Image (cartoon, rainbow, N blue to C red; front, side, top):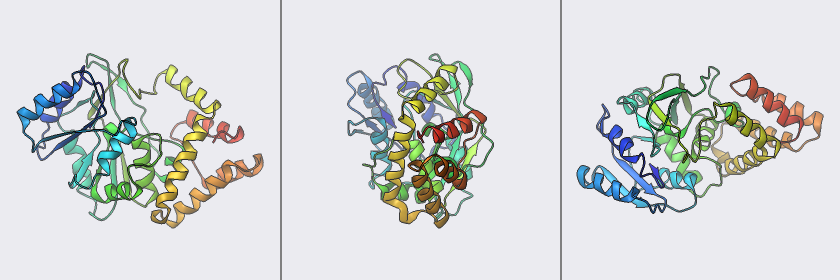
Length: 299
């Protein structure tokens, strides 16, 4: 868990973790220099749960993505499966059990990532809808241009975690969840997008990253595309993937190089390159945006 000024909701999230049907868990919290009551609340839970259940440490102070990656890439943290945890969500009691049940079906040496749809809730925890439901396969050709699931739904095995560690905690990417999807899918791992939801994704005024299902969220994405923000994020992802390019499958390494060349080519070659890479989003609007970005050289 990465925490930052989380005093309003963190206790309810901790209670939902304590109520899991699987009790073979341990929680590491990296607090990114909160000055509210977050640490006080965490310390109270550590006294109640014990040091063997809850470990609290100071984060790197560089934002939520480096904070989460500082945990994911720490060799002192060991386990069979790992789950990212937001401070303000609500986990259903079977959240860990559901992800672990699928991961149990994957051979230990194969990188595997479980992710899922979320149930959106308001500040009071009342249901307010769901995140988009995707039906196309989770794959590297999609991951290059779209992050399909929030980190708050993600569980991954040790083989996937070793890939994150090899890339390192200092990697320059936009979000830890998109990066995890890119790494696991690119390196030939298994990715499951579960249409069921076991996480209440709380929406409130303090969200660092909010739901994109609203008209406002879609408008903000369109503005980011036009201002070049999407291109800048893709550039950072491509540069980060170069650090583990030797781990990519041959097919995905070819796709990555083709995508990189196409982004800077002249219009016709750019469009042809994107077509040859067979990149795709999971929605019609997403695919329209992908081709608009390619035309405008914002990819």
